Image (cartoon, rainbow, N blue to C red; front, side, top):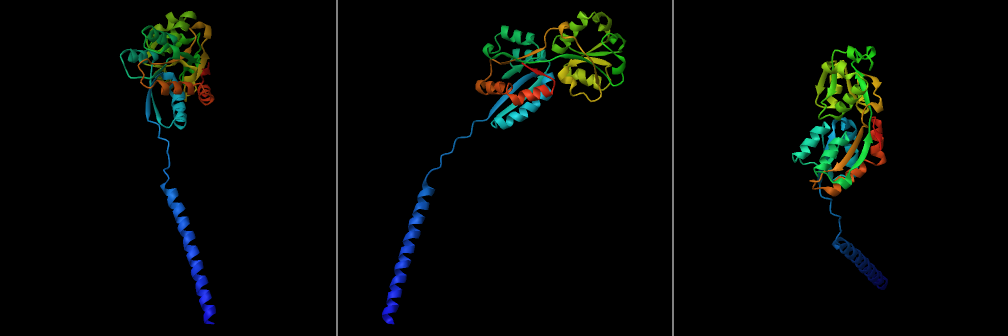
Length: 272
């Protein structure tokens, strides 16, 4: 019995030693794994872009910028919305902007002549149309032909707001300008025109088709004949002074992708 007991003690000791060796090996492997450095890709540096854009782009561009946050998490896009002529002036005065999207070719042409944009990045991005809208009280009683019966008509500043320039061209072409000129109330941009008609402060006004999609109380009276004014084209180009050329080019490219096109079309624009 004593010999048998010794054998069991010896066997137990051997099993214990083997188990300890196995645990040691496993621990060693674990330790080796912990010591291996894990390479992490550096996070992309944060980028801030400033986009000067025609006021008529407000709704569509705001939505696109929100979508772009998912595409480029490190890029912050800040839009500045004004009449295209105002944005042009700001760029001429050295305001820090990376991209300009105008509602008229003329403003972009001026900056190109002054060598303030990167000419090889310029392209026509969108088109639009012009509509006459009326306040909830007056819309049903007005037409283009009876516009002179309105007490006041909201119009974007002709020198700085392309929609105002297009409207004047159309009114002159249709022989209506002389009859309604004294009734015009000028506004700083097309969004202000829309607001004036929505609130009833103006009986009627001229805005883009894309602006009319956001009306709540005002109504569309008529679409202005396209052949009565210059083509409404939205050119885009990088500002020459940009310090973020690649990131700005990437954002401009995104504006031509299907997701952005869908949003532009939802707001009444036609994509080139």
